[in-house]
Image (cartoon, rainbow, N blue to C red; front, side, top):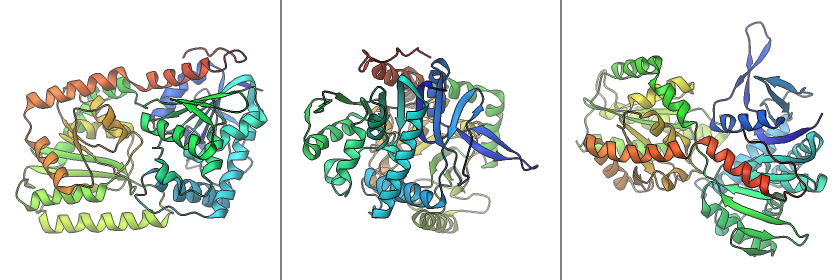
Length: 472
């Protein structure tokens, strides 16, 4: 059976859940990508190709909540080489401004090539004549070209969810040309920000030698590739409705009460990743307490650190460092029943996240580098009362849109302290003015608008031989 739309991503949009009787069920994964792409898949006879996690082999295609899913298996060696190795040990730090040092191992690269080839072959088998294939993210950057060689009749789109680095960093990669050529297999290459698209076009001109003009690359075979920014967003309406629900409203009150009803609650919610700037953020907050600008009697910092890549040594070390820092700050500055920092190393469902957003007065999002950062947008969506403050790193993609946040350089501890104080002391009138403007942005540019803009752009590419895409 073939499909008119094939979504190719590293992960499936569902998580595996083992029941007490040993049976396996699938639960929809949280995340904006699923909610954005799902209606387009339903309207266009689509299938989603991805890895369900784990190392089970011989997985069969299945349906979950009416979506056709095609699971890809990985061996333990491939998880180590392709996923933990090249994707997250080489590309992730390189694309995030070398916040950590990338490692370059030839055997990791070999594994990355093999897994990408298998994804491309599967997509080629599943796609109907002239179908549209949308490939996602840094783990699969070779798929577009591999797929193009197998199926030149397809329209292929690629979207990078993380930043795309400047030439000075990208050029360190021993396989730089192969990755650029891999992406050039697509008709449309999407990035979070115009800077990423510009970096890509510049590198193609310098390193591959193709002629370019603005956002277009001209290939020798007559094809034209467009590189453009499509800033991703969230299900704004869904978050706002959730935030207004009686359950979330009651839970937000419970959270404030459990924290001792402080005057102001600061909140950070991040994957425990070295790019997120958690350590520097907590240091800045601790210094404000130490200097007497804030007091644990009327302020608390809630930091949720969602477990991430726990098998990787770098992440284990980061967890240990963060645990020690929180313990030291609470030991030095906390009082009985009044910790300076309420630290939670756990993941939470969407309802609990919405309750935290409703309970928090000041959201602190200070990554060293982030493709977008949807937490910042989720917080804004949940503040239907036009109150609350957002302190946001200027190195998060969201800073391009949420200009009314208190923008900070996360490497500047003193600057971060000033912004936290200003947000703490701002009056309701100023908070409402800033929040209203940010809410207008996330309402008009939601995740549906993002998916539709990418899809309609891709549907127009090489239209002479492709099927028309039906809107969601």
